[in-house]
Length: 296
Image (cartoon, rainbow, N blue to C red; front, top):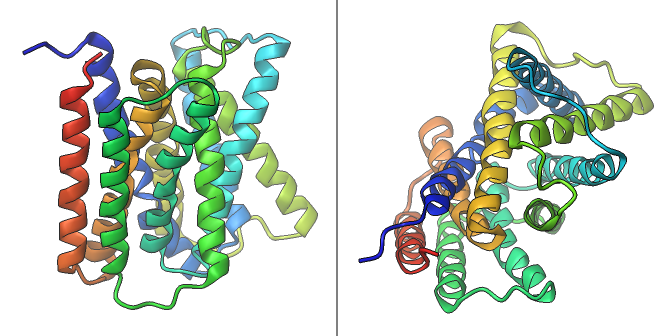
């Protein structure tokens, strides 16, 4: 049996970590939103804390922050896409359950595959089969969300989040301008753009920047948002996309809705139905199948 390549050994775990950490969004965001914190404020502090932490890390490693004008343009686009994805997702939480919103976002592997086809990169049949099976697994998970009313605006916002997230993945994978930029520096500039966007939104909306953010628990939630679903997930997404390709990296994002549903069950008391268990099982088998048959 052929061994996994070095890129696969690095890329597949990174993709799994991306899904798990991004799926932790509801765990940190919902307590803040329930306490009345504005979405713009939550996302500003999430990004700003991440920029400070990552900036210090890069500075201590004496990493160069220098980029050229062309790279700055691509990083600006990446920052706007990533910012839009976060904003659409958090807005969707106002209309539908957080676990359901995060589950719907898993449309993005299909969107990545379609975009890659237009770019002349056609995924192999095991990847297409994994996409179909994991999407089917996610549908099963959604069926097990307890008969909650599904607001169309929430669905559209979640789908919008999926689309811009797919574009973000494809650009990281395909852009030659940023090919030589380290994953850490790429993440730093992407999040810097996001923090500036949300600071601008706060200024224009005349929102009190710390409204609804009170007590140590709230600040720990913001720190958690900065570390796991932001720094770790963005950096590992870049690693996965560069090592195993945009399509396979996006398929591994199935761990995102799995994590979000488990968080909802364990932290917020949402029921864990047979459909959810079946959906998780189907998705994990599909991802394992893809990894075992696509070692290149």
